[in-house]
Image: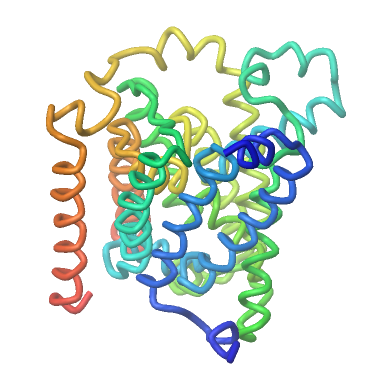
Length: 187
Length: 175
């Protein structure tokens, strides 16, 4: 465990790890089809379900793996409290941008990697501007909107007041069932 | 033996499972959720420091998200390299200005596409920071950690996205 702490605290190790995490992530996103405008926009138009298949598969595998890693002390939970003002309003603004651009913050970089110039000159430049605008507005938004309407719980098990593993079992069954339904429907 | 690396695409289930493992590895090795929008804040802050150091360093938001080259920053150059490697190995790398789905409805004008993409990018960057994360940070890493806020946020990404995509392609596009 001390090696792990040393890795987490080493600035140079983290820079190299970040780069390689990004490389694997970009490779998997591209191979999975999620760096393609038509695939992402098709998901939002409900004609192509590749993005949901990719995301749900990641969550199905990661949810169980994370609990095991957490149990043995290799990972910490970063789940944070949320609010209507931050998560719901921000999520809807994000959604509008998601549909107009046709990429999200990670896949926009992946699309640049496979040669999409609208992702570079439109998307990545726009994201830099948007992030800057938010940094400018943050002091005003922070108390007036972002803190409004706090959610009653941090995690789903706390919210439904049930055992973590029972919740995971139900969520896993729901996600796997949904994917099976998609295949059955030929989507 | 390495033929799978040159395949055009993998099953989304397989690629997704890989991303699930990678998201957990990020939590172990970096003690951070695998997110992408933080990098844009850091990059924007670094540009701000180059232009006006005093003003940028005083800004409240950059006290929380420090503009520096670190793990979260390196994710974006990494993704560009990884996606380039994948598309180059499979021979699908192409320079494109206008995606074909967009072109089939709104025409081949690169200017129109870039203007709309820029507007989308601004909303995306603004909304991602407003919501405190993106499709991977909230949608995948947050959901993996059973975060209620992350699951609600991911649902809002898709609710807003589906509404605007339908408006764009099913209403404006058929006028």
